Amino acid sequence: MRKILQTFLPFKLVRDGGDAGVTAHAGLPLVGELFHQLGLAKLITKWIRVKQRGYEAWQMIEWLVCLCIAGGEHLDDIRILKQDQALCRLMGWEQLACAKSFERFLKLFHREPQPGEEGQSVPTPSLALWGLGEVNRLLVHELILRSGLRCVTLECDATLIESWKKSSQWTYEKHKGYQPALGVVAELGLVVYDEFRNGNVAARTDVKEFVYQCLKAIPQGVKIRCRLDGAYYDHELMSFLRRKKIPFTITARKGQSFLDWVDALPESAWQDLEVTTSQGARKTGRQWAELPWMAAGGSRQEMRDRCYRYLVTRKNQEQWELFKDFEAATRKDRFEVIVTTMDWDGPKLLAWHYEKAGSIEHVHDRIKNDLAGNHMPCQQFGANAAWLRLQVLAHNLLRVLQLQCLPKPLQNVRLKALRFGLFNLAGRVTHHARQILLQLTAPAESFRIYQRARLRIASLAPA
Image (tube, rainbow, N blue to C red; front, side, top):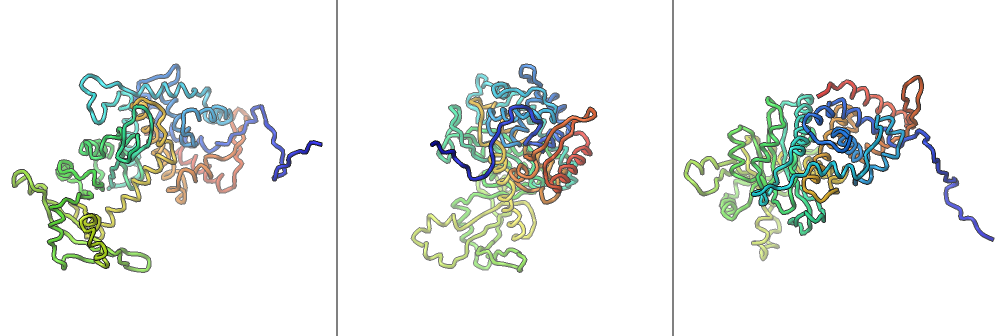
């Protein structure tokens, strides 16, 4: 006698082959409404003059942005949204493109190197890729104005993306991939500029030009402070920022001559570095000292122009004698150095500078892991650059939604929390009295958040 396999939970699985009018992504229309309310469709039409077989550029970009926010990491994942007919009715999508169409669209952003350009560390972008950058720049410019901030902190850093595409290059981490650089406004978490680079291009390449492009996205009248890591320790960049009267802190390199000057400091110059907690001041196990220093080379005037304020921290001396046999190897590890033009008190300035690990590093993580920045779709360099720039656009849209349309507890949560509590809600789509109705299957709190978000999006004036 044949036995029937019993499952643990007492339900029977039945497939509904028809269109039941139910969607599992009922929160995704918030992204679509924000996309159009901010005027992105018009901006894209103005700045990106490419078209893919009957589809407008703004349509393709809207679909790709929604795909990545919904959780898609590959172009083939578009089939999940395409099969969700209830969602398509909500979003007004008549016919979504297929994965091949999206691939062909991304390849329109690629530009083959011209004669004499083969050795460029950062290839010249195509007009379409440049236009996509302009769309993001204008969006960020408008969002900074709306935020009301009178002073912003600019952070720049590169990140590694592992990719074994045939066209990718070896990175310093001994894997193939790319090393794009991002510029971020720390107070808002907005990416003001991105530059896609091959894996063998060092983070310190063309740092002055990169910072200049980042500054273009920040409105005039808004004060800027720069907080940069060691890749941006470049005297040409520092002179440029000083001429522009932009205060900065940069992680400095620890050369042999500089460490000799540090060793020459009297012991009285060192002070305990403390942090303030809810229980009061607490020692960090480090000490700090300050000294003016200039790099040798050039005329006297050039050397004077390179004289900056340097703040040095060192680990305390307790039990340092255990490492005396490895003094040459550990000498640099004991010290951390920053160079600055700011006149803040030393402990306050050091604490502010090292906050960058909690802002731009998080943006890298969200673009690569919460969105689809870690998954390059094509062989062509320009197509992959467009893909990353689309992730940046999606990230900035999410930040607008969080900061201006959602309650405070949701303003800094990860995207997976938004998917779990807002975007991936179940909803039934019906028609009544010539209107489309969305019936949410959600708790009362989620329904109120959704309702208020729609009202706040509607109140945003187009960019």
